[in-house]
View (cartoon, rainbow, N blue to C red):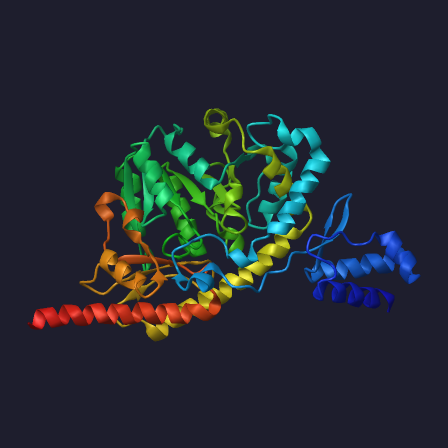
Length: 454
């Protein structure tokens, strides 16, 4: 069949490097003329290549070669250390060239609009595309409720300070949680109550007590692949938390910044259980794409729209338009979907290797969390080991991890918990890194026991 011949030739040119990432492919008509076949044969060939994530289309522009995941070495390989500390996307899988192409296309399509003042809420055309994108995450909303923000952290920071209809002022937050949330609470001098994440999930009775007796304005939660634990809630837990929020007039800020990595279509966000405005859904594109873009969104209920946009205007006028336009093209072209498929595969493999290494290498006194997706997990060191000393000893072995102390509210601080991010560690180094962690744990325990014996 002609289309199969076209496919094979184009694929061969891509694989041997003659067609470079970002390179525009011949037009459908010119290729049909070259092969002496129908336009439909070329369309079918290009369509099949798109399904294989070899090429992507850009409306009114043509077809381009997808950037391939580079097989080079990560920073940890080049510098001689294993980096469980850095928490950005896998550097060898960031879509640099694809996004460069989208920026160029955005300038071409929108021209002067990309460099002029724009709407506080975000480009209308991008918000329409984001509404379509959110459907795959079981978030059904309209463009007018979507606000483009400079990373999900901006939305979090603004929401902490805004008044809510329930007239309450206190915040409830998972313990531990990511550093930027802790800093926002501290900076705005907000009163925050913690709810501990355990290996059994949240204590829902304790959460109900907090909602009932502590004037909770909103509950901030990361429902999938939480930072730093890597844990996710079940649909049953999500539904129950929403029911408690409805019962006690509490709003939920659901931060789903890693939701794109979840390949389980049966998992629903909390937003799906109450899309009326009780659950304020936010997400980011930073962790799965390019952190420096600082692009995210928030689905804002009507009662918060005016105050949120006023606060957003006071913060930065609007999110940079050039990156908004590029994201719109990136989503429309299918490049984002192809990229996410790669990311899911990469992080699923890495997280699986990490969990396997935990099971096989860590001593029985060490407890660990995390899942087989996403890229965060935490280890609680055996008593009486302390994270600070442990991390310093581990650095001497060229393995870097993070101290989780700064991820707790003051009254919840734990000094024996470390966080690992697997995102920037090469697969072949994961077991080696965990083996080193296990060895240093044992060495420190031996020293403690020796001192006690003396």
